[in-house]
Amino acid sequence: MQSPTSDEGARRAVDKKNISLTDKQPMNKDNLWPSDLSQFAPLMKQYLEIKYKYDTDVLLFFRVGDFYETFFEDAKVVSKELELTLTGRSETSYNGGRVPMAGVPAKAINNYVSKLLEKGYKVAICEQMEDPALAKGIVKREVTKLLTPGTVLETEWLPQGKNNYIAAVYKNKKNDEYGFAYVDISCGEFYLTRLNYDELISELNRIMPSEIIVPSRIEKTDGMQVKDRLLDVDPVIKSNWFCTGVNAEYFTGGYAEKRIKQELNISSLDSIGSDEFINGIIAAGAIFSYIDSTHVKERPVFEKIFPYEMSSYVLIDKTTRKNLELTESAKGKTAEGSLLWAVDYTNTQM
Image 1 (tube, rainbow, N blue to C red):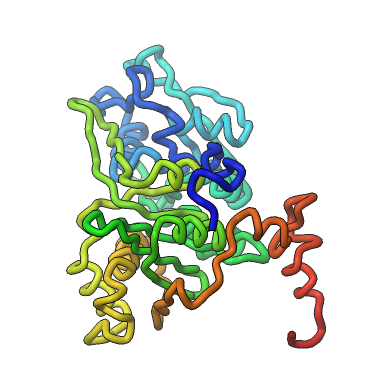
Image 2: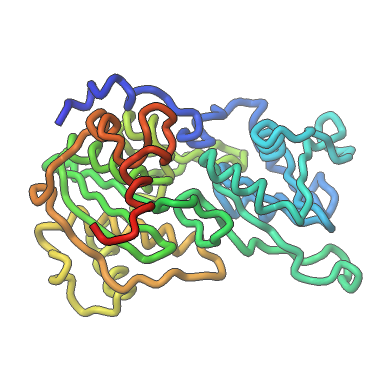
């Protein structure tokens, strides 16, 4: 196993799509959401009230007639990432008299959201909950889907031909052991383990999760609506994978034990290994807390969590995995030409 500083420097190279929105847009005076909602017309006030229920790195697509609109900083991000024209909505009391706006047709929302998820963004879909023609006053709206790269259930938004894993990383600072858990929520495949740093990097390179849950705390600027999540995670992991912060209170043994028992309908964690895998169990509990917060109307079903020991397997580092062309070809970096691609064409079991 190579050291964390090797592997051709790949792990230290910053991948744009794997950096959180907070990192992409450092907080400054020109990038703060308005705190005084009373200055806005009813529609814009409703938009901001819903927007502020979520972290600001969640892009809110707000249904208005036949379009989903985004406003303020969200509109600037969406306009840039989706190559849309940045327009504006008239708001006389707002600085400059116009609020930045970018929208997409409702019938094409799946296509646009898929592109944002591939780039590592989180998206909230806000629907009209009543017929505008029958509404008295402002139309009632609410978020019906909160989509993140690792928690997608809809077939049209899932990556094709591979698992879509969401992982959680927890570091026990008393002994420097890591707890690691990952799951594909579209099929309920759930695993956890305990490992050291080198083994953790190897596992992340093996499963390539779409999203990693890590402990965080919220820092709020006085008088402003911006909530900045400070992530407690190794900088190498943060710079090479899309990381999402979850309140540190959900990374505890007590919470994990209670939540896992509830989810699996069991009375004891002995079958998982409650003592030796406690750090992995803590990571698994954090994944459940995140799923609870993202799946507004739907719930995936989990029947079992599989613990595993790293010592039971041969570790393959990223460079070796690449040279063996196990899941992607070295030439085109696509599945075509890889071992997995060849196996998919076999007619009999191997």
